[in-house]
Image (cartoon, rainbow, N blue to C red; front, side):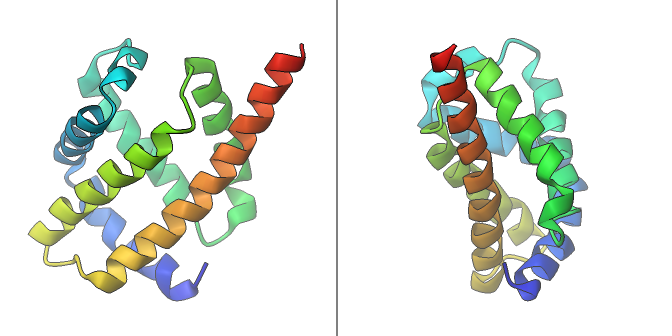
Length: 145
């Protein structure tokens, strides 16, 4: 990951957090449009989930400059997603919904451009690859039991 990408992500994430409810709503609307079967994975109130999404992402992205510092958060997220029965294939739709949400929120703040988009794609892909790797290892371990 490039330092310039990390800086752009950190600089723009604050504006997403300031619009957490709206951001969560935009994300889940798009995600469920792309993955209608994923809706069944969310047993609790989706309003609470909107805030949880933004807060979970905040924990990771505020420490993104030191990947070794987010290792435990990534492991926790991966294990929790395996427990919930999340299919790793959902991450493609998650990416699309997440970037769409960022574009909408950050465009409203005049902060969305190709450079910001590239930074978010790069960092999202790096973190997601780590989550998927752990999820696949966890799923394999479950099968072997």
